[in-house]
Amino acid sequence: MSVPKFDGFSPQHSYFIGLDSDGCVFDTMEVKHKQCFFPAFVQHFEMDDAAVQAQETWEFVNLYSKTRGVNRFKAAVNTVDMLASRPELKGIPMPSVEGLRDWTRREPRLGEVALREECRRQPHPDLERALAWSEDVTEAIHRIVREIPPFPGVMDVLESAGSWADMMVVSQAPTEDLQREWVEHGIAHHVQCIAGQELGSKGELLSRATLNRYPSHHILMVGDSPGDLVAAQNANALFFPIVPGREEESWKRLNQEGLERFLNDRFAGRYQDLLLQEYDDALPEFAPWQVVLR
Image (cartoon, rainbow, N blue to C red; front, side, top):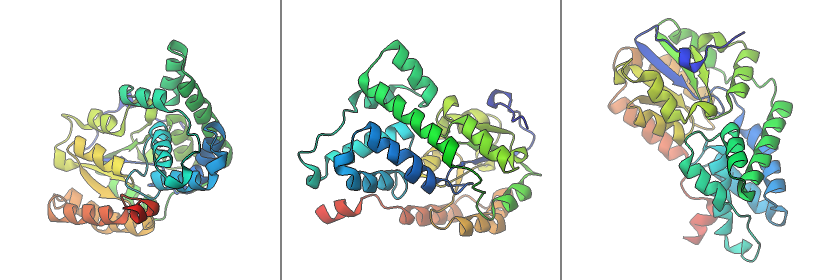
């Protein structure tokens, strides 16, 4: 099945729903980070001497904190920075990430394609290491992450909203991976298009899809990470959180009350504030070892 391209997106309804994919629609975050991202991180960033702390830090940055869902290249920088601040690792050399840090600050499309082009234009050991790591991660994902179905309740939402809202996948995963997953599970036909990291940040994608096309109270972003919330806020959109650890409950709540409130302009205000507070409470800002040290 062919999936419409982002540039060809054309509104069909007066409401819009953006959907994150990893950890939101699909229960893939844990397996991707624990079996694909982290093993390759230890290898390429040479963290064997601190593997236990590196795993704990990687999972906190990417799964169990307010940076959950951050772009993979920013995640590598954040993880090295946090490891360097751990007193028990004093004396253990940390890999250089300054070249990668600089690239993530100036490059708007943080994907493998853009990094590969940068390595060709301006070779840098930090960037070449990050590219090799990312390519190994992508290969591992293709090999390992298969046949993981959507969370219970996702289909109910897609079917309920499909008759009155345009829906689009807004993700920082590679577009090819997103299309494969959505087609593999037979749900791609529910969305107007699938947009991944090569096309811009989540905020850019959401804004480009909705600006001057829908009133702000007719735009809803559904996601599980703080980055999804920021994208919604930057696009002046509403936000429904899929709370990590309570995904099935969240999708049921969206179907049973969130969609009705969104459709009938009763989402903004007190209801939105309640959802945001519950979501904020679910993700810590500081790691357990930082709390102890403070």
